[in-house]
Image (cartoon, rainbow, N blue to C red; front, side):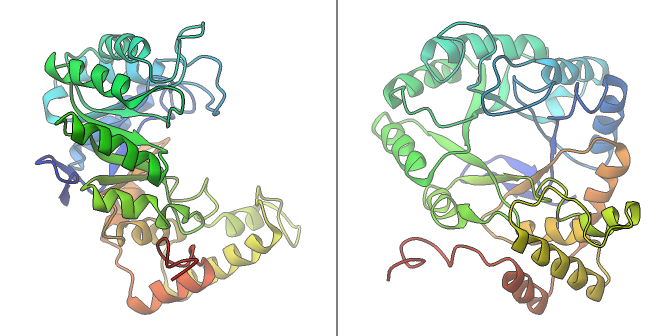
Length: 329
């Protein structure tokens, strides 16, 4: 297993992070234990979860579940491997009812951290990530709460998720004035089919010495051979797929054809393309089975040629580079 430094920190994590969003929902406790055992055996030392995981997820979720964290905590207790794992979880979405049950107020951050520690059966969280950008809470309040948790030894590093580039800049500016380390990582959606973060988020993370964790490398399965799999189950000429834009169907078809030409599995190509970006620390994979995890681990050995990278860029063009050159000069 290969490892890479998490941004400007001295912490090393492997090139594949185990995501646990499915634990407690699509994946039951026993299956989750098998996946974590297999991940550990494969050399994966980085596990990512969130307080809200454990049931159906959506941006406006009324209340989170906490089940995924509880499953991880049970596994840590049973396996005794807590100190060998870099543990990341998140805070933002509501876990209790009421006006202060969510977001990033000092009130919510303190309570959410205490509750996560209890569910995870641990005394500290290695990477505590803000699950979303909070436009209502001032950074002096957010950083005051995070600094307190660091001093108490309850968290080691702070990261962000789904932040805009300007949000990263605002956070780091306030942290610098407080002589605080600030954000060490950003977690964003990134795939061949969703390259928006190339415009400002990746440059901002690079400028601030932050690691980048990515999710949805397979774009919900569309980049994992979805057309071929659907065709095998249907006699229709164009299988019904959750594709947002009709033109995107043709791109996916061209993508699968290109993968066949090179003799590579579409899922492996999608993951390898993300890993080829030097700004990316590691993609997060959310396997529902041990077999899916094993496939992701094998995919780490796939390397894409310059010619294939060029052709992938033609099929799935990005935003045209980084801001402002992408739209100005």
